[in-house]
Amino acid sequence: MKSFTDTLGRTWTLVVNVATLKRVRVLCGADLNCIIEVEDGKPETRLLEKLSTDPVLLVDFLYAVCKPECDRKKSPMKILALRWLAMPLICYLGAPG
Image (cartoon, rainbow, N blue to C red; front, side):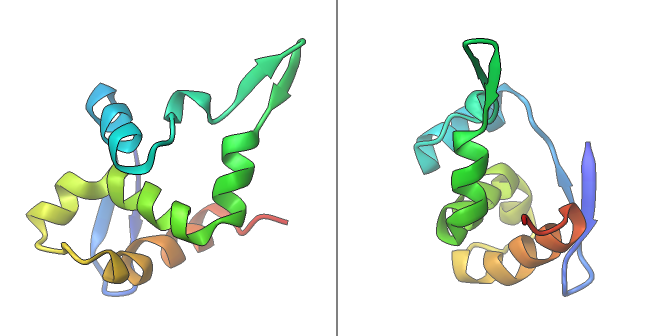
């Protein structure tokens, strides 16, 4: 599990399990199992590329992954998720490019 601290000093833990896979699929229409696929022996990263170029999908995706924790921390608004989740995580993982 990976954890990060948001701009408000809250710690968030990324848990990826079957429930997370289903929640991301239902809320975002994205299949986390397909983040990297192999076609003709070569890795394809279409979903990863889409996440790196579509900030709205990225925030929805992160919100879906962290939704149980957002609910526990009473952070229901997706617009706040952008400030709380996406920016610190982008800094943590390193911006693409």
